[in-house]
Length: 444
Image 1 (cartoon, rainbow, N blue to C red):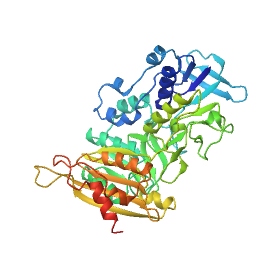
Image 2: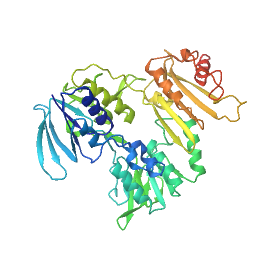
Image 3: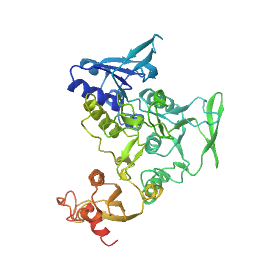
């Protein structure tokens, strides 16, 4: 059986490895536009900031590794067209310009996502950069060496991490976002206030509740960002305003959400059963609401890619959905979230209650301890746990992984109060903070 894989970052790499290792008789061909695979884009800020000093360690696989498994790797090849009726793809060799036609029995779409590029006047000026792949990361590093003022547009995870990296490198940084605070999709206000205070203490300019209307330049390079509220002098702009699924090749040929995210079933088959899809090109089943959502995360991608690889001959392994669990480390604060926040619960029309615990991470007789802020969201009628957030200078982020499992298994907030956790003074208190949240909710 002939399998063609289009795109090979996280989902594609996982799919190919699992197919190649499990099914010896498969003929697998990978078409990838870049000259590399498996780049960990979540490490870009660490690379830019000099924490990750060896760029090769940001890759966990290579074309050579997959070729050693018997896979035909075609890097720097762009798929131009997919004919789902005849099961053929038209591909261009980006080096030679040659165009060929290839056929498949099964197609795996792991084309990922691409940064949203807003249609703003002046966006083609030099020194306005995207932040997604390895080559863009290198360009950011090189350009940032020669400037003092940097503007980051978009206050999600990547934007916030880049702001920290630039500030620590001695740059004057402005963060612009259309919302009234940073990280608004992941954390509620009482959590983001803590991070914003740290930013202001370091003289980072926060330009919130405003959108960019124009870029102005001098000698072909960006020199000013014009927003609905301000004019910001700058020498370098990094666009981090979000991602969109890279699925144009199959538009109108399979079922998609309005934004182009591919809809898949529990086995990760599309509406065309011979086409599988995984990763940032897909919608995912979001367990807190039970609805299809677009949540581009590397963790989702590797899980989905692995399942595609196992299911390619026969659908056997089901995708369990996701809670959108993620974490972040900024200026010594460790924070993580899973599922719904109060903001996203309201947007989803969920009737919920919230409980918050502020507690030290271990007994006060220990030489050191840190304050922990933990918040849980639960459905009012069923008392199912739907979301959680934590922040502390101590690393308490694994509590969010635990709560992600609780959401997936539909545990109630009341059950959480009496789950058995260990106690050891080096690590926690006799009543684990998760127990405390559950017990506190009994009063609601």
